[in-house]
Length: 496
Image 1 (cartoon, rainbow, N blue to C red):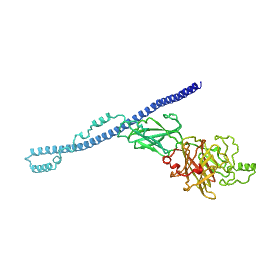
Image 2 (cartoon, helix red, strand yellow):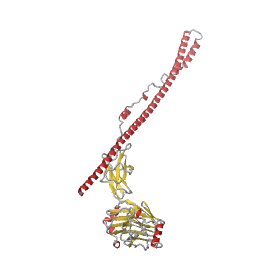
Image 3 (cartoon, helix red, strand yellow):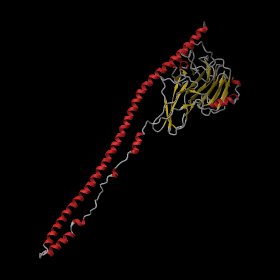
Image 4 (cartoon, one colour):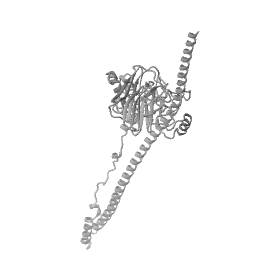
């Protein structure tokens, strides 16, 4: 019966997943129909605008060329009319002289003939007809203003839609996710020398498989990529997966996006569990600040109840070995707040396997600071490293400066310079807890233990503050150190 129930549950799960896929595809088809209408209307509008622009250019060119013809015609007409008028006047003058000469010749016997003949001769010498050029000043040929649009007509007839670049194909085998970086590699199905650049889009998601259309996270855009690969650096993997797609662009248009791919981005993501924090710690997201007034009222009530006076410092606290009282489940952590001199706050995500890495940057002026891991059973009065339920690196700037590794109330002094930013690497199955300088990845200390319960990230601060960075992958340099055995090379037997 139980087997059948389990089989039915699997069937229901499979059907639910398939239904979700079909619903997503239906949504995709509906969206594509809307896109077809909208995009076709847009390209039609753009085409009409381009033709109107072309018509405008042709009309402007036509007006200019017609104006040139009119100006040339007016200029030639003016010159020819002036020349015609001059010739007409010269002809009239010449005809008058001719008539006068004929009349004088008929009166050759007259005594006035010599004088008249001399006047006619002088008149002919000065006649406009003999000073007039009988060659037209301008030509009537207008062939220099003729046009041949054969080449332009062929160009117009050859007009067609712009060539669209092919769709890239993302090469998952060559793509890489490491060190909070993603290197994406793609290739073109056909060689295209006209490709100018690529556009890459990515977004975070918690869903495996093909990207969903209804996704809360927006696509982030990177433009102007010249090569067929790109590396995103400095990422925070606060979700399980990332979607990627890429398209090619030439000088004019962009092609279709590639088939989207989903890459897993494994990293340790957690938040600080404010329900576990000491009243004097002000927790805001992943930042913590010690507040002297935060638990004043609670401390007064506790002192009145317990009959105690002023509390001691967290370094020399007489209560550091006090066993925890019975805890009452409260808050999402399922445990009481830390109290007394245990200025502690825990993470909200259990570590029960695998490798995990996170970093913390603390204020160098903090009087005391600690980072490490703890069992969930760590007592509400217990300070980190003071019992067998926690391991930590501790920085003390109060009274005397010290940098120590602590576990089970034993401490090992570390000789390395104290960094202001620490990296924590926990390999649960190997029983390794290593601390690094977060900037240089210098190994500071390694605990080797057999963890018998799930662990929680743990932090403590007194008169100071710190900031946690999560969503980080185990750095490659840390993995290399562990592979070479460097992680177990230091002498830590007194603390295991």
